[in-house]
Image 1: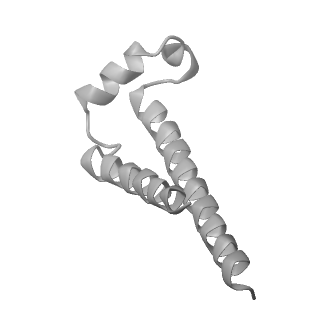
Image 2: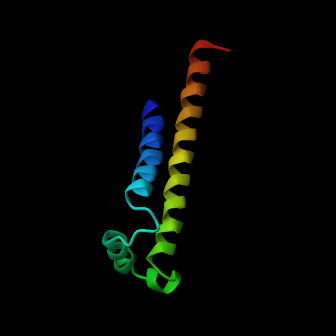
Length: 84
């Protein structure tokens, strides 16, 4: 159950590390390669910056949700084990 919290921390941490390492204003070849490698991404997004901005919020939201789920399971199991 603790692993859910750890996964959430990794998800949020990974999102922020990627955001700091590859800011939107920079012209990063890695982001362009990922953008061009996706099947329908060039049809759905105007450019790689728009794609990166959209995916960053998705990864950050996922990390926060997993972190919240892990925390609630951890707290719930503690109350179940020791009573209220």
